[in-house]
Image 1 (tube, helix red, strand yellow):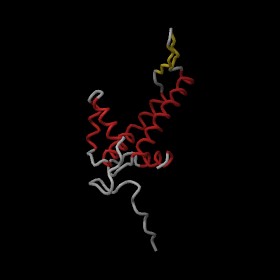
Image 2: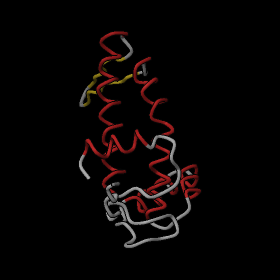
Image 3: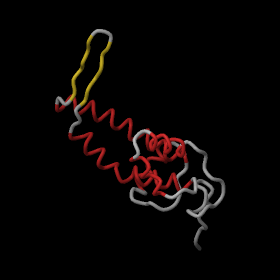
Length: 141
C-alpha cells in the first residue's frame, strides 16, 4: 500500500474499529500525521507567533507552544489514529483493547511499538481476511 492509498483508507475508515489494517497502512498514516504536525506547527508559528528559537552554548532548539491549526489537526486525527491502531492490532490477531497499554509509561509504548512493527498474520483470523488479499468484487450483470 502506498502513502496516498493508506491515508485515504485510514481517513475513509475514520471510525471503523473492525477489520484489519496492514503494517504499511498504519505506518504511512503515522508518517502523514507526523509530517502534518510539523508543517502546521511551522505555519502556526509564522501566523500566530506560537514558537521561538532558543540557543545557548552548544545547543540550539525550536520550541513550539502549539497553535490553533496544529491543535485542530490533532483533534481531527485523534479518532482515525485510534481506529487504525485498533485495526493494526486486529491484523496481529490481538484485541484492540491492547491499545490501552499505552497508558503504562515507557513500557506500554515500547510494547505497542513491538506489536506495530510485526508482519501481518497470514490468512484469515478472527477479525477478517488478511489486508490486500481480498478478492476483487464480482461485476453485476
